[in-house]
Length: 299
Image (cartoon, rainbow, N blue to C red):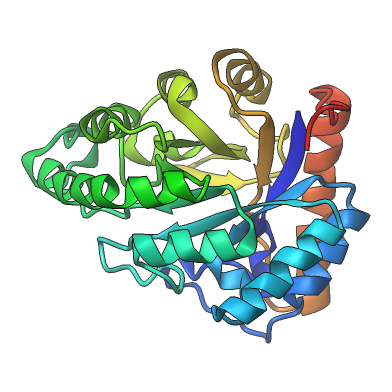
């Protein structure tokens, strides 16, 4: 099993997608190529690459990125968003363009989130007619684009982002019914639609091409609770069970760590160090507790 990093984990370094209108109070701190050197220093096998990492999208630059990853023996996966809900996530929102970008990068997976608009109450909106209409529209796009992805040797992985139930992702995959189209498992996101994370992982594992291996902590407060990010293995998601399901019930042979901490933004150097320390603790947990190590036959 290979161990990689979802580059959103370094969003405080300025290379993550602009999720939920977040504005970084300081300039970008890592170039794409410095990121690759950092991945090597961290002992990682690859990167699940946000479109926000890329400083340009022209083919010549993308081929340089591809060569740099190959020189360092890093696999690449490409992460973008359809942004169907108009939330302004990422920089690229067209499926065919994303497949072309991934092909130039040498990435073999395109992860897409739909970012649907859900009616409230969210917990009661599973297969809501308004959601189904949006997913039908996306299914048509997937059906048109899947052959091009297959021809390029690329898998399209639809994430259970904060906008969808796992059963809806399965419904979508059944509707498209193409071998190049599968799922991306985020181990936390089911909580955002009030679904059991373990059930979501079990539902998606047989159809999944990639994952965001992430943990959150539940912080109880006087008026409810708060979900806050933490290092993998330090939160309230059963990460051992999540890994066992992925290892035994899916064809995936990569784990992509994702972290997102609630870090104060009044001290840049302290924030950057906390972000890196969280990533290092997550890598150590995956290596030492879960035993994730590269097999001699894996690339």
